[in-house]
Length: 299
Image (cartoon, rainbow, N blue to C red; front, side, top):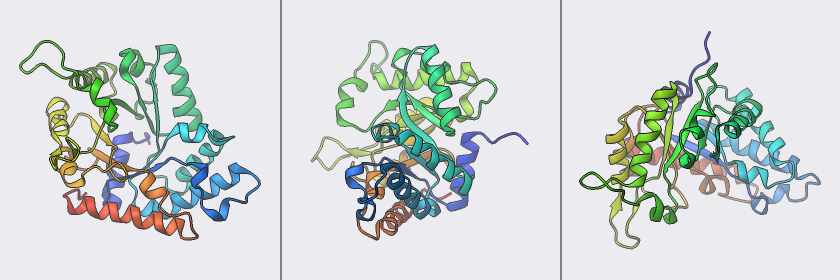
């Protein structure tokens, strides 16, 4: 039987748990629960912590998203990440694991990143920085396994991104913004490379703009759906500690199971450093799941 592609896997998981919540696994050792602070080996403490988070939040998660830098910055952290990925795949085999690594380089280097992450780490998908052009996507394609998710950075949630991604280019009325061109390019690359079925974009959640105005801005999501229709799925950061707005996000971007995954990291995994850290994380994930459902994100 052929292996399921990422987007089919994501859609089926979302329907199974009726949740669009992506749980981000972005550990910081200074925030590790107190019960693990006396462990002699940091990797043992890290694994125990993240395993407990995974097990507690799994009932509410449609996918897990470790952020690679958070693991690479810890001694033997990448080895520990691979153990966590293996645990998820063993215990929750229907739940995709997506690596947030934002790799973007020439083809030969991207091919090495493909081996490192999609093969050695064993994740179901990863994101890339498209600044160096089609090479950034093409080098990640494994023609023998087109089921992996390749997701390009498009409209990110950090405020500083606006000075670059919102630059208007010449041509058109109104002239297109840089991120709009990038959305079109990533879609065209995906079609050319034969990976459209599982390809996606990083698209920030709706947010208050300008800050303090009370105006909720979700036009980027609506516009992106106009550009790519439902051909690409959206990985949506910015909810939780970053203050994104759930109702407006779901209304503008959700088109059914497999169309979006809404990520929350710090708000969930750092919910508590006490003995109740896993229970607190589960409550945060459950609350976000329910908020998304109430906003219309039912699967």
